[in-house]
Image (cartoon, rainbow over the protein chains, first blue to last red):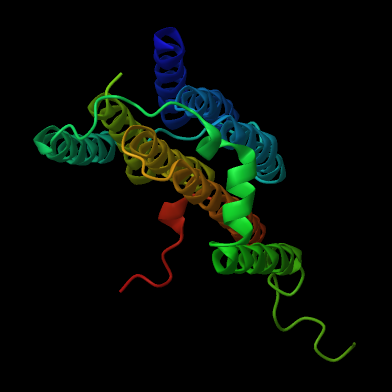
Length: 174
Length: 101
Protein backbone atom coordinates (compact mmCIF):
# COMPACT_ATOMS: atom_id res chain seq x y z
CA UNK A 1 0.00 0.00 0.00
CA UNK A 2 2.65 2.45 1.04
CA UNK A 3 4.95 1.41 -1.80
CA UNK A 4 2.11 1.85 -4.27
CA UNK A 5 1.36 5.33 -2.97
CA UNK A 6 5.00 6.42 -3.13
CA UNK A 7 5.37 4.97 -6.63
CA UNK A 8 2.20 6.76 -7.76
CA UNK A 9 3.41 10.09 -6.40
CA UNK A 10 6.89 9.78 -7.91
CA UNK A 11 5.51 8.75 -11.32
CA UNK A 12 2.90 11.50 -11.34
CA UNK A 13 5.19 14.34 -10.34
CA UNK A 14 8.06 13.25 -12.59
CA UNK A 15 5.70 12.92 -15.54
CA UNK A 16 4.10 16.27 -14.79
CA UNK A 17 7.46 18.06 -14.63
CA UNK A 18 8.46 16.46 -17.93
CA UNK A 19 5.10 17.44 -19.46
CA UNK A 20 5.48 21.05 -18.42
CA UNK A 21 9.20 21.51 -18.96
CA UNK A 22 10.03 19.66 -22.17
CA UNK A 23 10.93 21.82 -25.18
CA UNK A 24 9.87 19.27 -27.74
CA UNK A 25 6.09 19.02 -27.63
CA UNK A 26 6.12 15.26 -28.31
CA UNK A 27 8.22 14.74 -25.18
CA UNK A 28 5.69 16.79 -23.28
CA UNK A 29 2.88 14.52 -24.46
CA UNK A 30 4.88 11.46 -23.37
CA UNK A 31 5.39 13.11 -19.99
CA UNK A 32 1.64 13.58 -19.77
CA UNK A 33 1.21 9.84 -20.45
CA UNK A 34 3.62 8.92 -17.64
CA UNK A 35 1.87 11.34 -15.32
CA UNK A 36 -1.53 9.82 -16.13
CA UNK A 37 -0.19 6.31 -15.40
CA UNK A 38 0.82 7.61 -11.97
CA UNK A 39 -2.61 9.15 -11.44
CA UNK A 40 -4.29 5.85 -12.35
CA UNK A 41 -2.04 4.10 -9.82
CA UNK A 42 -3.07 6.68 -7.21
CA UNK A 43 -6.73 5.94 -7.96
CA UNK A 44 -5.99 2.25 -7.46
CA UNK A 45 -4.34 2.95 -4.11
CA UNK A 46 -7.34 5.07 -3.15
CA UNK A 47 -9.58 2.05 -3.63
CA UNK A 48 -11.26 2.76 -6.96
CA UNK A 49 -10.11 0.19 -9.51
CA UNK A 50 -12.99 0.99 -11.89
CA UNK A 51 -12.10 4.68 -12.05
CA UNK A 52 -8.44 3.76 -12.53
CA UNK A 53 -9.38 1.58 -15.49
CA UNK A 54 -11.47 4.39 -16.99
CA UNK A 55 -8.56 6.79 -16.50
CA UNK A 56 -6.24 4.50 -18.45
CA UNK A 57 -8.82 3.92 -21.18
CA UNK A 58 -10.01 7.48 -21.72
CA UNK A 59 -6.99 9.57 -20.83
CA UNK A 60 -4.01 7.48 -21.88
CA UNK A 61 -5.81 5.64 -24.65
CA UNK A 62 -7.86 8.55 -25.94
CA UNK A 63 -6.75 12.05 -25.06
CA UNK A 64 -3.00 11.42 -25.24
CA UNK A 65 -3.30 9.72 -28.60
CA UNK A 66 -5.49 12.54 -29.88
CA UNK A 67 -2.84 15.02 -28.77
CA UNK A 68 -0.16 13.06 -30.60
CA UNK A 69 -2.31 13.27 -33.74
CA UNK A 70 -2.79 17.02 -33.25
CA UNK A 71 0.99 17.44 -32.93
CA UNK A 72 1.47 15.37 -36.05
CA UNK A 73 -0.96 17.53 -37.99
CA UNK A 74 0.48 20.82 -36.79
CA UNK A 75 3.98 21.43 -35.50
CA UNK A 76 5.75 18.12 -35.84
CA UNK A 77 9.44 18.03 -35.02
CA UNK A 78 9.76 21.74 -34.53
CA UNK A 79 11.82 22.91 -31.58
CA UNK A 80 10.15 25.86 -30.00
CA UNK A 81 11.93 29.00 -29.02
CA UNK A 82 12.38 29.23 -25.30
CA UNK A 83 9.90 31.39 -23.44
CA UNK A 84 11.28 34.56 -21.98
CA UNK A 85 12.98 34.28 -18.62
CA UNK A 86 10.72 36.93 -17.08
CA UNK A 87 7.60 35.05 -18.10
CA UNK A 88 8.83 31.77 -16.64
CA UNK A 89 9.90 33.41 -13.39
CA UNK A 90 6.54 35.14 -13.10
CA UNK A 91 4.71 31.88 -13.74
CA UNK A 92 6.83 30.09 -11.14
CA UNK A 93 6.16 32.83 -8.59
CA UNK A 94 2.43 32.65 -9.29
CA UNK A 95 2.35 28.88 -8.93
CA UNK A 96 4.41 29.00 -5.72
CA UNK A 97 2.13 31.63 -4.17
CA UNK A 98 -0.88 29.48 -5.05
CA UNK A 99 0.89 26.44 -3.58
CA UNK A 100 1.71 28.26 -0.34
CA UNK A 101 -1.85 29.49 0.08
CA UNK A 102 -3.20 25.99 -0.58
CA UNK A 103 -0.85 24.36 1.92
CA UNK A 104 -1.83 26.92 4.54
CA UNK A 105 -5.52 26.15 3.95
CA UNK A 106 -4.97 22.38 4.01
CA UNK A 107 -2.90 22.40 7.19
CA UNK A 108 -5.48 24.63 8.84
CA UNK A 109 -8.19 22.05 8.33
CA UNK A 110 -8.84 19.50 11.02
CA UNK A 111 -7.90 15.97 10.11
CA UNK A 112 -11.42 14.63 9.88
CA UNK A 113 -11.20 10.88 10.00
CA UNK A 114 -7.93 9.06 10.32
CA UNK A 115 -9.14 5.54 9.66
CA UNK A 116 -9.87 5.10 5.98
CA UNK A 117 -12.94 3.15 5.08
CA UNK A 118 -12.36 -0.35 3.88
CA UNK A 119 -13.36 -1.13 0.32
CA UNK A 120 -16.56 -3.08 0.54
CA UNK A 121 -19.80 -3.47 -1.22
CA UNK A 122 -20.43 0.25 -1.49
CA UNK A 123 -17.30 0.63 -3.62
CA UNK A 124 -18.28 -1.96 -6.14
CA UNK A 125 -18.91 -1.38 -9.82
CA UNK A 126 -22.43 -2.65 -9.35
CA UNK A 127 -23.19 0.12 -6.88
CA UNK A 128 -21.68 2.73 -9.23
CA UNK A 129 -23.81 1.55 -12.12
CA UNK A 130 -26.95 1.52 -10.04
CA UNK A 131 -26.37 5.05 -8.75
CA UNK A 132 -25.43 6.28 -12.20
CA UNK A 133 -28.71 5.16 -13.71
CA UNK A 134 -30.99 6.03 -10.80
CA UNK A 135 -29.93 8.94 -8.64
CA UNK A 136 -27.62 10.59 -11.16
CA UNK A 137 -29.62 9.76 -14.24
CA UNK A 138 -30.16 13.40 -15.23
CA UNK A 139 -26.46 14.22 -14.96
CA UNK A 140 -25.64 11.08 -16.90
CA UNK A 141 -27.95 12.06 -19.76
CA UNK A 142 -26.69 15.64 -19.75
CA UNK A 143 -23.12 14.38 -19.98
CA UNK A 144 -23.97 12.15 -22.91
CA UNK A 145 -25.53 15.15 -24.65
CA UNK A 146 -22.40 17.21 -23.95
CA UNK A 147 -20.22 14.48 -25.43
CA UNK A 148 -22.40 14.27 -28.54
CA UNK A 149 -22.26 18.05 -29.02
CA UNK A 150 -18.50 18.01 -28.48
CA UNK A 151 -18.05 15.40 -31.18
CA UNK A 152 -20.25 17.30 -33.64
CA UNK A 153 -18.56 20.58 -32.81
CA UNK A 154 -15.08 19.09 -33.16
CA UNK A 155 -15.93 17.67 -36.57
CA UNK A 156 -17.47 20.96 -37.71
CA UNK A 157 -14.57 23.12 -36.55
CA UNK A 158 -11.85 20.80 -37.78
CA UNK A 159 -13.35 20.20 -41.20
CA UNK A 160 -13.96 23.83 -42.09
CA UNK A 161 -10.78 24.29 -44.03
CA UNK A 162 -11.05 25.91 -47.42
CA UNK A 163 -13.02 29.09 -46.98
CA UNK A 164 -10.75 30.41 -44.25
CA UNK A 165 -7.80 31.20 -46.51
CA UNK A 166 -9.53 33.46 -48.96
CA UNK A 167 -13.07 34.38 -48.10
CA UNK A 168 -13.77 36.07 -51.43
CA UNK A 169 -12.58 33.23 -53.62
CA UNK A 170 -15.13 31.05 -55.29
CA UNK A 171 -18.06 33.29 -54.66
CA UNK A 172 -19.44 33.18 -58.17
CA UNK A 173 -19.06 29.48 -58.88
CA UNK A 174 -20.85 26.90 -56.73
CA UNK B 1 -0.78 8.22 4.07
CA UNK B 2 -3.10 10.75 5.59
CA UNK B 3 -5.73 12.87 3.93
CA UNK B 4 -3.51 15.94 4.26
CA UNK B 5 -0.64 14.24 2.46
CA UNK B 6 -2.91 13.29 -0.45
CA UNK B 7 -4.30 16.81 -0.67
CA UNK B 8 -0.84 18.37 -0.69
CA UNK B 9 0.12 15.92 -3.45
CA UNK B 10 -2.91 16.96 -5.50
CA UNK B 11 -2.11 20.63 -4.86
CA UNK B 12 1.45 20.08 -6.10
CA UNK B 13 0.16 18.54 -9.32
CA UNK B 14 -2.29 21.42 -9.73
CA UNK B 15 0.46 24.00 -9.30
CA UNK B 16 2.68 22.27 -11.87
CA UNK B 17 -0.24 22.43 -14.29
CA UNK B 18 -0.84 26.09 -13.42
CA UNK B 19 2.80 26.88 -14.16
CA UNK B 20 2.46 25.14 -17.52
CA UNK B 21 -0.66 27.11 -18.43
CA UNK B 22 0.93 30.45 -17.56
CA UNK B 23 4.44 29.89 -18.86
CA UNK B 24 4.04 27.99 -22.12
CA UNK B 25 3.18 29.55 -25.47
CA UNK B 26 2.32 26.45 -27.46
CA UNK B 27 -1.44 25.80 -27.44
CA UNK B 28 -0.98 22.04 -27.04
CA UNK B 29 1.31 22.59 -24.06
CA UNK B 30 -1.36 24.80 -22.47
CA UNK B 31 -3.91 22.03 -23.03
CA UNK B 32 -1.54 19.58 -21.30
CA UNK B 33 -1.38 21.94 -18.32
CA UNK B 34 -5.17 22.06 -18.14
CA UNK B 35 -5.33 18.25 -18.16
CA UNK B 36 -2.86 18.14 -15.27
CA UNK B 37 -5.06 20.51 -13.27
CA UNK B 38 -8.17 18.42 -13.96
CA UNK B 39 -6.35 15.29 -12.79
CA UNK B 40 -5.30 17.04 -9.60
CA UNK B 41 -8.96 17.83 -8.92
CA UNK B 42 -9.87 14.17 -9.50
CA UNK B 43 -7.20 12.97 -7.07
CA UNK B 44 -8.49 15.42 -4.48
CA UNK B 45 -12.08 14.21 -4.85
CA UNK B 46 -11.09 10.56 -4.58
CA UNK B 47 -8.84 11.18 -1.56
CA UNK B 48 -11.65 12.92 0.31
CA UNK B 49 -13.98 10.15 -0.85
CA UNK B 50 -11.58 7.55 0.56
CA UNK B 51 -11.03 9.11 3.97
CA UNK B 52 -14.34 10.89 4.69
CA UNK B 53 -17.01 9.00 2.86
CA UNK B 54 -20.58 8.48 3.87
CA UNK B 55 -21.24 7.11 0.38
CA UNK B 56 -18.14 5.91 -1.46
CA UNK B 57 -19.84 5.41 -4.81
CA UNK B 58 -20.72 9.10 -5.19
CA UNK B 59 -17.13 10.30 -5.26
CA UNK B 60 -16.24 7.77 -7.93
CA UNK B 61 -19.21 8.91 -10.02
CA UNK B 62 -18.07 12.53 -9.69
CA UNK B 63 -14.62 11.55 -10.95
CA UNK B 64 -16.18 9.69 -13.87
CA UNK B 65 -18.08 12.88 -14.79
CA UNK B 66 -14.84 14.87 -14.58
CA UNK B 67 -13.14 12.40 -16.93
CA UNK B 68 -16.02 12.57 -19.41
CA UNK B 69 -16.05 16.37 -19.44
CA UNK B 70 -12.27 16.42 -19.85
CA UNK B 71 -12.60 14.20 -22.90
CA UNK B 72 -15.18 16.54 -24.45
CA UNK B 73 -13.03 19.56 -23.66
CA UNK B 74 -9.93 17.97 -25.16
CA UNK B 75 -11.80 17.10 -28.38
CA UNK B 76 -13.05 20.68 -28.81
CA UNK B 77 -9.69 22.21 -27.90
CA UNK B 78 -7.73 20.01 -30.31
CA UNK B 79 -10.09 20.81 -33.17
CA UNK B 80 -9.74 24.53 -32.41
CA UNK B 81 -5.95 24.10 -32.38
CA UNK B 82 -6.09 22.46 -35.79
CA UNK B 83 -8.29 25.27 -37.09
CA UNK B 84 -5.89 27.92 -35.78
CA UNK B 85 -2.93 26.11 -37.29
CA UNK B 86 -4.64 25.88 -40.66
CA UNK B 87 -5.39 29.55 -40.70
CA UNK B 88 -1.98 30.91 -39.68
CA UNK B 89 0.53 28.01 -39.75
CA UNK B 90 1.43 28.46 -36.10
CA UNK B 91 -0.03 27.62 -32.70
CA UNK B 92 1.86 30.21 -30.69
CA UNK B 93 -0.60 32.04 -28.46
CA UNK B 94 1.40 35.26 -28.51
CA UNK B 95 0.52 35.63 -32.19
CA UNK B 96 -3.23 35.47 -31.58
CA UNK B 97 -3.82 39.10 -30.79
CA UNK B 98 -6.46 40.54 -33.13
CA UNK B 99 -8.82 41.18 -30.25
CA UNK B 100 -6.22 42.98 -28.15
CA UNK B 101 -7.61 46.31 -27.03
